[in-house]
Length: 117
Image (cartoon, rainbow, N blue to C red; front, side, top):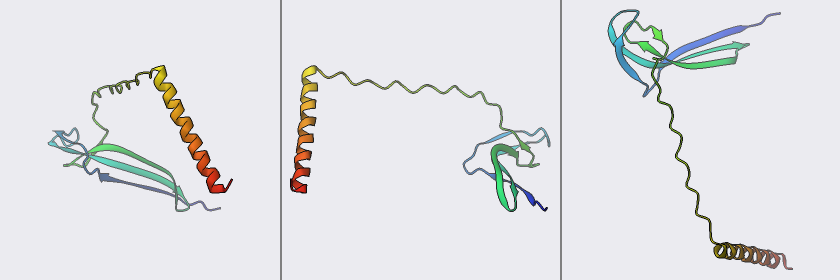
């Protein structure tokens, strides 16, 4: 029995991705790091079964790839609470109910007229 496994992988620079200048720990030069997307996939019989993508940084000089920098991410602020509409006075509620009831009656009368009843 023959099973045909394959692996695919690659990197590409993220357009509009983050960049920064810092000293590279590998080549020990002050250089620019660019955000890249590293993709990897495994498959069986020419069909990809597992795909994975993650973002990392690559040194422009030695092209060594590093994990994302540790940045103190500011905690996300909770969205502002939605303002509750002011409750309608009882008189306005009754008028709203009456308008809805009249609209329903008008729609029923139109349907009966269309059906010929």
